[in-house]
Length: 412
Image (cartoon, rainbow, N blue to C red; front, side, top):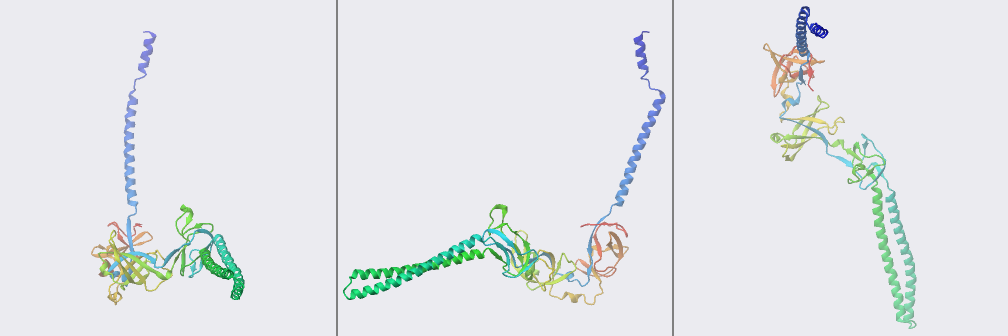
């Protein structure tokens, strides 16, 4: 056999797979399949455990006192606190701010100086008007001196003409000179009056550089700083301010709500109302309907209603969110007189368990199961005789399978 043939035979022999290697490869494939199945099982178990550890999401509501007047409201609405007297104070002229004499939250009185503008040009115009007046007055004095001399000349001419010494022409000239000076004096007096009018105009321009408070109130917004330009109209793009400050008369605060036009018949002027500020949900503020605006919003199908507070409080601030309950004529406070109810809770918070009524309280993110003794139903609420106290947070919406001690997440 030749050398090249031996080499090819040797190469083919190197490609032979031994029996031991075949056995080992099958076992490796079986181990790989086993490991993959084990991994899938671990992932499935982990997913189940993760789902079990997820906190259920619930909605909560607070239990209210049994004497809550809102429980028997004819109608509920929401709106905002709005002042009847609110003004953005602006300058009457265009000018540069030279001083700002207030800050947010400061109480100001009517006529108090809030800011000043550059008055150099206005004062120069005032000085020029005064100078024109003084010049006109000086001219009057000169004409009056000349008039005295002209009247003497006229009297002399009249005497000489009567004596036949002087001609009629000389007398006429003397009379003309006197009348001319009288006319000049009258003209100068008119010029003085015109100068006085210009002085008043210039003085008004000077006064316009001082911005004063139109009424007593509290400054809620500071809209200009020293060095900025202000104008009564929008000018100069975004570099010119149109306001100096915003003042609110806190004594004019009231509530403005939009009532659906389908229920506006339940609202009448003078009707008693209970208001609750979003900032103080437990504070029930007695109010009454001041007026029903006699027009409707066709897009929202609502009618605007204004409500007055029976007594104002410093905690009531403009633009606060508020909820109102319109009450009926019957004194609601007497309805529950003698009732043993401790609290009012939403009907949706009550669950049934073996014929017993229960609720779930939320404390520190965990549920607490409570058995409750219910009383009469009031609209969408129900009285609780025992088991719940006012202020307790109760689950009103959530999964059915809730249990005592379970951790939950409160939906905001």
